Image 1 (cartoon, rainbow, N blue to C red):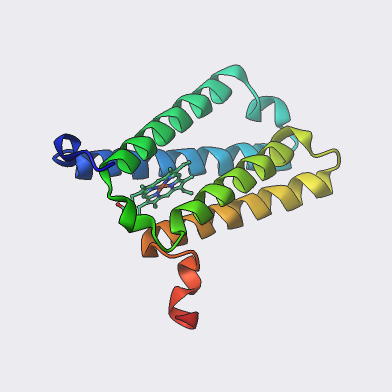
Image 2: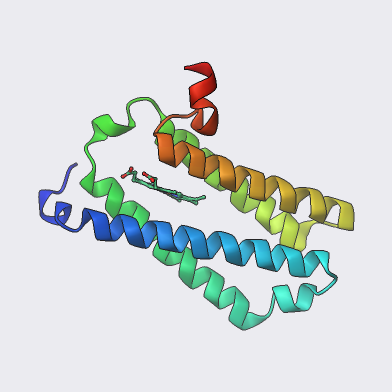
Length: 139
Ligand code: HEM
C-alpha cells in the first residue's frame, strides 16, 4: 500500500489535511453558532455551504493521500478505524445541529456533541490510539 513516490510530499499533504481540519472545524463551529443565534439562513447560505463542501473535499482528499502513503502497520491498533467511525458520528450530529434538529434544544445538544466528537477525533489522530486524549490515563 505504501507509495514511496508520494512519500517526499508527506509533510506538505499532512499540512494540507490539518489546515483543512482547522478550517472545516471553525466553519462548522461558526455555522452552528449562527443557528444558535437564530440565524439559520446565514448558516445555510449557498456560499457558506459551498465553501464548506470544498474545504471538506480537500480534507478528505488529503486524508486519502496520507492513507496511500502510510504503511498499513501504522493502523494496527485500530486508531484510524475509530477515527473514521467518529467522523461519521460527527457528520450526522452536524446535520442535526445545522438543519435536521427539530427543536432548539436538539440543535444545541447536537452542536455541542459534534464539537466534542471533533475534539475527540483530533486526540485520536494526535496519539495514534483509539483512546485519544485519554491515552495517558489508561495506558
Ligand atoms: C475523514 C477521513 C479521515 C481520514 C482517512 C484521516 C486520516 C489521517 C491520516 C492517515 C493521518 C496521518 C497521521 C500521521 O501522519 O500522524 C491524519 C492526521 C490527522 N488528522 Fe485525519 N483523517 C480524516 C479526517 C480527519 C478529521 C475530520 C479530523 C479532525 C476532526 C482529522 C484530524 C487529524 C489531525 C489533527 C491529524 C494530525 C495528527 C498529528 O498531529 O500527528 N482528520 N489523518
